[in-house]
Image 1: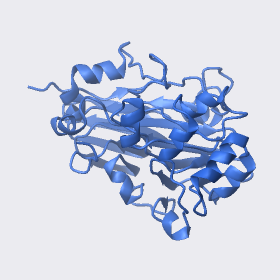
Image 2 (image 1 turned 120 degrees about the vertical axis):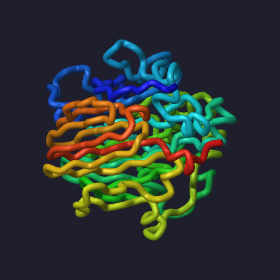
Image 3 (image 1 turned 90 degrees about the horizontal axis):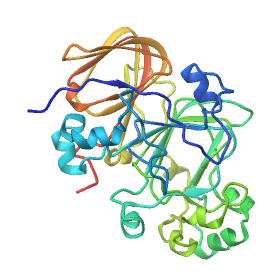
Length: 348
């Protein structure tokens, strides 16, 4: 019989990165922005290591155990039998708080099939961004090429490290809190300075970086050892006009419903995210592995087994499937991040 696990409050987990940022994460979590441990990414509920590393990136539970190992040891309790049957003993999900203190380089991520062939990984790296804050003069994101390009053109830009041409070829979209962008595998993209997101992604660290100069130590760090000619095989060089962009971008800031489905429909086979907004009321959540990120307010998380946990702005929780039916109450805004439902999962 599967045992009952309770939600676990997660500490900050900020492995070192190559770019600036982190003050927005520190402000959300109520920590000092000058604390050197606060980098631009907080990997929340992570069973994923940084590329090529042993443990950097993994979430350590307050008990001292890696979350990855805890889940592997009791996968059905953490994830549910249907999830395990489809996705195995991985959560299938990595959640990050990402604070772009400078523009990120132009990059893209591999598909599942490409990752299986070249990185021996079940998962590629499809992702999505939920904008939860912005600052500075002109916060914007850059999803997809505006017009269809040849692989040869992109290869030349990469050889020459022609950053102005790379960035100029991308769509450029101003964003504000409540906007969300789904980034399918292969789609070239960048995040601009002053954009703070909750990011959902498949549980890998495969970034193929076209614009590596001034960001990474070497071109090898850009193509992850497979060569840019090979990497470009998984790049989407097709044009994304306004109609196509509407299939990946949503604007949810004006939606005051108690629960708001945040992401574009096509993302559902990879992950799910909804915003729960309470003003003194309560809301029930069905059993599911989930990562909760509290954006504002304070309240309580209760489980059907009698557990009761305080939730306030900046708190993050991993909620196991076997916590059962849970309830959030109070005056609270929370983003709930989940793997795909087993019925919708692309895996298998």
